[in-house]
Length: 199
Image (tube, rainbow, N blue to C red; front, side, top):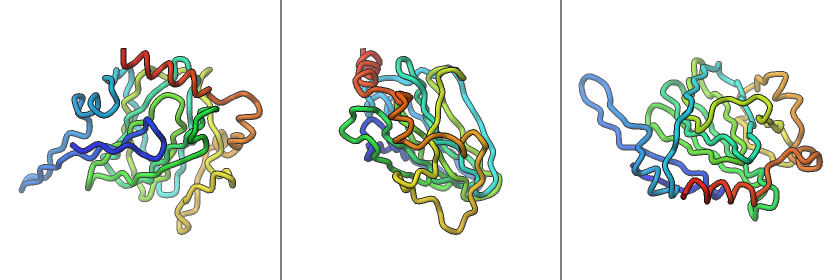
C-alpha cells in the first residue's frame, strides 16, 4: 500500500495493491501498519458508516468540533465518487485549501480525514457506496457543515452533473460565515489533538 499526503496537511490518500484473478479481486483498503507509518498514530475505530447515493448526490462538507473531533477513513466499494477535504482549521497556514481524490472499486484508493478537516463528496454514478471508519461515534451536537457550493472555495463539482443536496447542506453557511460565527475548529486545538494521538 502506498500513502501520499494531500494538499491539506494531515490528510492522506492510501492506494492498496489489488489481487485480481479468475474469481474476482481481493484488496485490503485499510492497513493499520501503513496508516500508522504515514500519520504517526493508530486509528481507533468506534463506528463504521455506510451510505449509498444516486449520481449527483453531494454529501458534505462536514466537520466536527475539536476537541475531541471525529476522524474518518473512507473508501468506495461500489460506484465512483469525487472525494474532497478542506482545511477549515482557523489559524492553519493552509486554511481554505482543498484537495480531491477519485475513489472507486478499480484502484480502491482511500482517504484519511483527520479531526478539524471538512469532508464531502459527489457521487459520479448511481448506487455509489462509501464506507467510513470513524474514530468516534456520531455526536449530533458537535457536528457541523459548510456549504459545498461556497463560491469562494470554488470546488470543481463536475459540470455535467446536476447536484442533489440535503436541505441541511444546502442551507449551511459559507466558510467565511462559519469563521465569523466562531463555528470552525482552531488550528492549535487540532495540533494538540494530533499530538495526543501520537502519544
